[in-house]
Length: 312
Image (cartoon, rainbow, N blue to C red; front, side, top):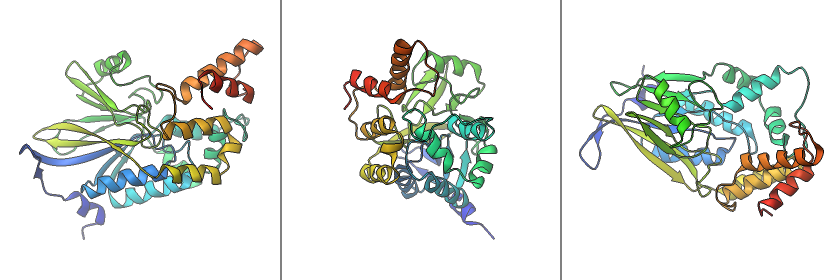
């Protein structure tokens, strides 16, 4: 008997608008960060295209409410389609924190409140899932060129790769295959260097330079090679924000949650995100107190950092 998953994979080849044969399509999704509303929108689009092969590049949980809803969707997709899952830095966080000798994430804190919340919703089944994930994986689809899938880079979940930067070129020089798929930076785009390509599909949940859209990529296998198609989709952002309010995010991590809201509503100044606000927070803390030990950062420095960037 042929399973549902096998049936989904038995799509016949087709041709694109230029007459090139399409042997398959692979949807590549990264950095969901618990935004199950955006994930469902992206998957709906891909499934309507007839795609049945999916590659997920890590950071499944994070900034949004009800993480278990995201995980349950991923389990469902894995049952019904051909899915590959890669480890992200957030998955490393949950696993390492589980082995901690002491608690250091605070439940009410703009610095660690969201980490505490997400971790508190990780179930035993989820931990088992995370423990099996790999840092990087070579993937072969039919006779198409081999892909390497990772989160930050094949060597670290927290690499500084971004489309077009020197780190991306350095990493491409170190790998043997011609296609590298990665996430982590939340910036959609490609780097071409020495005949190789590094592709970031963008973030499903909290994209940067994305105008608040949910982003992913589709790789099309065409006559022995891959052709990328970047996708940006609007989704019910108000639902995502309403769930954040229901879960008490603005009390748990007030300034972090405000940044998330501004980011998905496309209301932050260009180039501003959680990471560079946190850098400013830590600079202010160091400047006033002489020392800044993450995560023990008073809320007043978050308030001041947002003021410095003109964020209300």
